[in-house]
Image 1 (cartoon, rainbow, N blue to C red):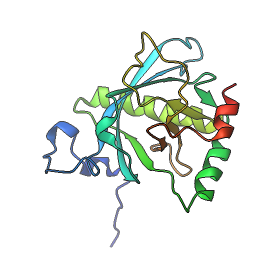
Image 2 (image 1 turned 45 degrees about the vertical axis):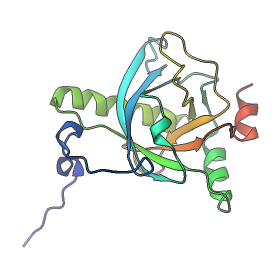
Image 3 (image 1 turned 120 degrees about the vertical axis):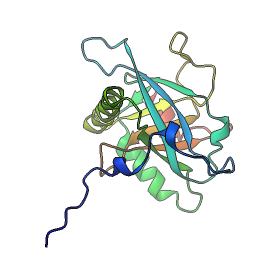
Image 4 (image 1 turned 180 degrees about the horizontal axis):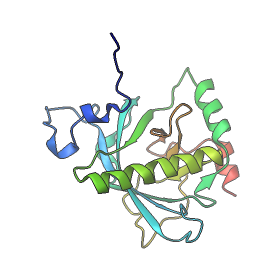
Length: 189
């Protein structure tokens, strides 16, 4: 007898609108929002791509209830820096005072065509970050919009690809005045 293992587990998770929500605290509630990313298209670096995502499996004090509904960043310097190995090493070395982390994945949308585009954009973002060994810097301030992006943040979230999948991104959180590590701030200059 042959058993077939499902290769795509997304079919087991209903779209966000179809899920029933149980009461959860602010610490366990996932964040749902939009990444608004410019610089993904080589032919038009200024155009924005909107990617609907969910941040889950958070470790540490992440305060998702304070996060904006949109995170705006660019894949150009100084918003994206080629420091992925340094960030991963920094996170591994700080076991005594761990950095709060979250796993970011694409939302599963109801419309199959919209879902396919969202998933494709997400994987493209992950691929670009991975191939260029980049980390994207995003502010967790609600003041940043596509029309008026803020200066590169000194705190917020560092977004980088998971080492084992293009279907996941990892976020390292630096909240409430805790600034990014010095090597990140130096790379921004």
